[in-house]
Amino acid sequence: MMNSLYSVRMRASCHDRHLSGAERIVPVHAVAETTAALIERALSAHLGPPDKIHCHSEQIDPEAVQYAKLPDVHSYQVASVQEGRLAATQLLLGAGLSADCAARAVATLAGGAGPHGSVMRGAALMDAVNGERLEHDPARGVRVSRMDLLSTCRPEVEALLAVAGLGHHRVLEALVLSGKVLHAPGIVAELCWSDAPDYVTGYVATPQCGYQRISQLKAVGDKRGGRVFFVDQTKVTVSALVDYLERQPLLFDAAGTIAPLKKWEKADA
Ligand code: PML
Image (cartoon, rainbow, N blue to C red):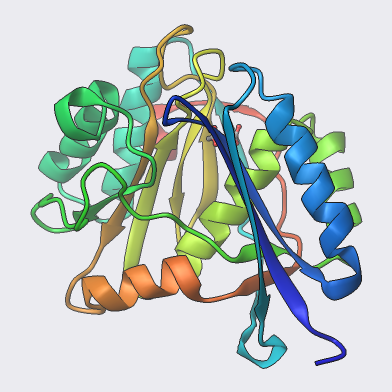
């Protein structure tokens, strides 16, 4: 395949603790350069040097690739963690989740979604009606993979985010990941905040409203965070959804809009 694409994925850990991960979908001529950049990134992870770096490249069939537009971005300023979690809850209710389900999801991330309150390596899957946890492996969760920006679209998206003051690499990576989640069958919403102790911004993403950032969803220093994906099981089976999230290649070929930062008002929900 002359025009073949490769999925290039990196995971770095120390004493089996996840330190960093990133991935790209690139043409064959960019595989070596991309691999070097991801390894460089693993070595400079702010949580310390890894003792293991896995870098994996795998050819993907260009005809299997789906294309989509990135979600629109909204950013809300909140005054406290409490207000942030209230805002997240209201946005989840707006997506059609029950109050019980939204509260369970917030409590899940706040307490550590993995076994014994640990941080999960991937995302939790939650039934959008009754809040039941659906992922088969509660320590691993679901790892969204094989998504990226089309190379011709990357400069525009990076420039738009930079102009909006959203140039941190976490924003672009979370936006791309969330874009894939919103494109998956049966997804009702996603709740996320980072497990990085110094990064307190998170988001609620929904197919109707896009990627809705909330300035504070946890306290500085808190290492707990992660992702919860809400699933409508009348639309998709768990195994079909997980297969899509983990294996279907998806490239974003157009940017969404980026709204200016706005103070959170309860009526926004
Ligand atoms: C953002 O600021 O939009 C990113 C929020 C979530 C970051 C999650 C992560 O650390 O990967």
